[in-house]
Length: 119
Image 1: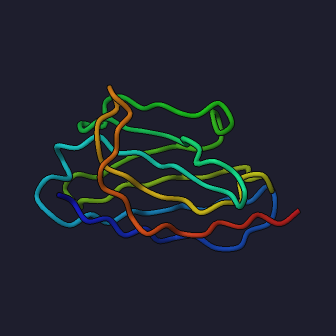
Image 2: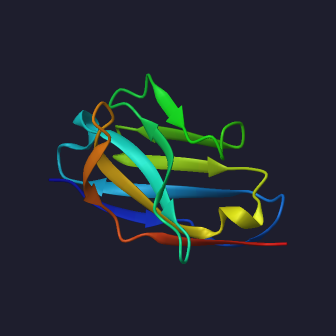
């Protein structure tokens, strides 16, 4: 099982940018598909983006397409989420997760990092 630790969250004004990182420990990072999901207060968890184990395929939720970019560096065991043109509705706790895109099941999760976008 892979252990995941997110970082890079914070407070940013609308229109700004943030880059989230997810550091993985364990030898299985490079064999796992990875994803970012988020949860805002009072709302259900929402899919943000996913990337295949090789980095060759990426997927995005409709609300972030064209603004967010997911990437990974398997040599560094790190997953990234570049967030541009942030909106107040992007405010949430962001989680990285490891699993399988084909079934959209993710068995390992980080503790989350808070992103707050002010208007």
